[in-house]
Length: 266
Ligand code: NAP
Ligand code: MN
Image (cartoon, rainbow, N blue to C red; front, side, top):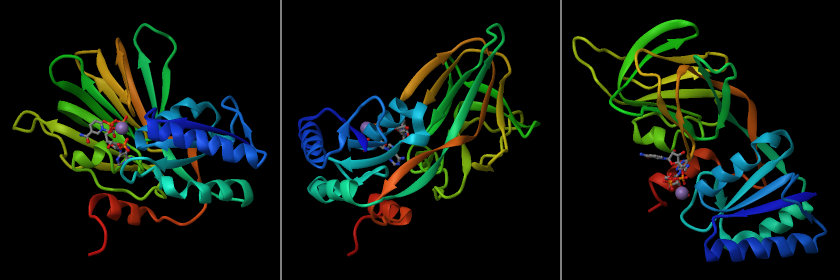
């Protein structure tokens, strides 16, 4: 099997990454950063987000696994002291794959003929470049509301514990193929009105943002930021693709939520 290792770049993560490479070579596995069937990410959730974007063109042929060198992560759930165990697992045992849903973002423009397509593992946010964001929101082709405020966040289930959570969104189990729209400081008064609650959309329910006046936006896709100009619409839906994680032992999502946000048993 071909593998690669990505690192956050700090001394601890680099050393661990070197160690894993050496071990896996001893097990006759091939280091191949171009066409790996397994990507081992050492660092934090941010490191795994980067690894996802580096290999998002071959998701169907790649399984991810994360080792955390800081606090417990949502995507990086192996401890540094467990790498020997992990390496033996990778080399010797057939592993299970769990798939998590992703968000597809399509930006269309007035002048430019070609649209742009992005995939997000956590979320995509839309803010105005200047002033407040004003957007007509359509769901399944029907106008739902006009949003006016700081911004909008569309998250995946596995991203629901990240930015979405800070915006008061619900934590969704990654087995639910869905996306969640949450508001950033909407203006609500007698003139402007939005629903106020986060919305969870199932597969095939498209959410479309259409600008009212301004057509330049700040779009984020996970840790990346883009300034999008001359925008006609921004479309969100559950992507056809999934991210695949190699699972060598059970680590239920709710347990990860508890250990990250509530703490250990008293
Ligand atoms: P960062 O600023 O280092 O990340 C912010 C924190 O979010 C880090 O502690 C990161 O964990 C954690 N995180 C990432 N994905 C998560 C997930 N799915 N569930 C729970 N926590 C998660 O930047 P980054 O590491 O490049 O991550 C980018 C992400 O930051 C964005 O996708 C967005 O979700 C998040 N963000 C959050 C806010 C907010 O909460 N107000 C604002 C902007 C961006 P690690 O330390 O393990 O990397
Ligand atoms: Mn980070």
